[in-house]
Length: 218
Image (tube, rainbow, N blue to C red; front, top):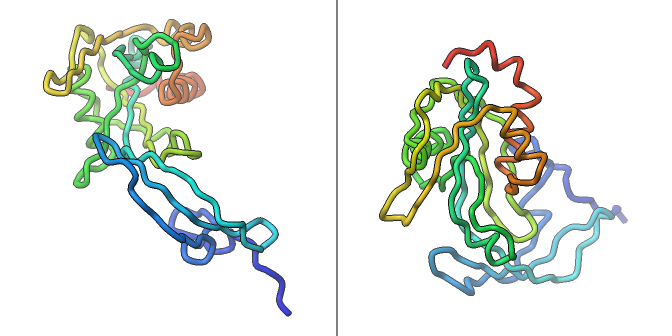
């Protein structure tokens, strides 16, 4: 009698060990809410690390699409562009709803992440990104409940004259642009003024790669 096979022996294109058909059995899937976003309910079982199957479990998934985000960096002035806007999530939690963030937006079906970064930088900050778009990371925002996958960039950009209030009126956007020295942005990060993962990850990456990027030209 052969031993149960644990999950994670088949490689996919991105190098992750996972076989979608063999390691997961979806017993039912229903859309339980459809509005601006969608919530799907799954009933499934999955392979355990000992090679056996889990019992059937139920999970809800928040479907909001996938996104791209970008931190514009000016190496000549050692400054970054951050944005500030109202966010309902922190308000519901009891925190300040005006969040310091980086430019970000949802990827539509016919778009690449880099195209979204450039479009959103113009819409949200009036900023034309430089030609060099450096990929920082690809990650899941909250994998326990949300399907959203984020592609994160840093863009070497001339930030001369950056600032003001921007956003798309039809989307009720009211966005204030901050062009600040990187050291000030890192102080905001360390003092807890920046409280969202794309900005935190991008600024920490830039702090590690700052000297290398200082040689880049916007």
